[in-house]
Each structure stands twice: as structure tokens, then as C-alpha cells.
Image (cartoon, rainbow, N blue to C red):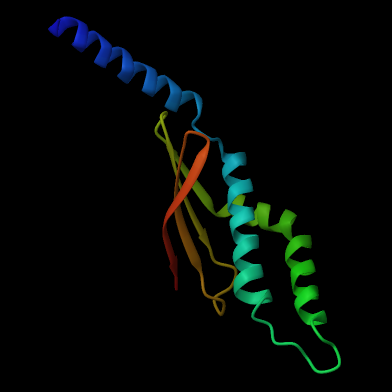
Length: 126
């Protein structure tokens, strides 16, 4: 009975490891995730907080959203160049540090990828 429990436990552990290895997301999946998150943050924290201008209504806000959407290819290049991936076979850790210019604050994100999903657990700005 003890051997059966041990074998079942071992088989479950091997199965979990195999599932994790097969679903460890790659760098291109992370880049898509990071772009989606950055776009969302820009729209919510910058574009939506733009105050309407008299006689223009929400035109400035709409232009901000359009600018964010149209800059997705450039964001992909920036994120790709600013990210280091540590691949642990079962999961990956992505560290992204975006520093555009010395007069613009830099931002860093640490994200874990496993089971074809991502979880950003550390965000910082300087």
C-alpha cells in the first residue's frame, strides 16, 4: 500500500513537471502580455485622466488613446530590448527595465510565466 501511494505521488509529480515544462510561455508570449499590460496602464493612468479642453471635448483623450494604440510596434521593440528571461524549464522569470531617457522615470517589472500565464509580482519606478 505504501509503495502504491509513493508511486502515485511520484507519477503525479512527474505529470505536473511535464505539464509545466510544456506550458512554459516563450518570450514572444511575454512580449504580447507586457504590451497589453503597458497599453492598459497608459490608457487608464494617462489617457483617462486627461482633462477635457473647452470646445474640444474629449478629443485630447481620444488622441492619447490613438497614440498609445499606434505605438504598440515600438513598445514591442522596447520591451524586447529591455527584458531578460531566466528560463528554469518549468517556468520563466522575466525582468524588464524600461529607461528611455535620464529625465524620464524608469520602470521595472518582474513577471513569472508558467502554465501559459503570467503574473507580475514586482513593479517599481525610479
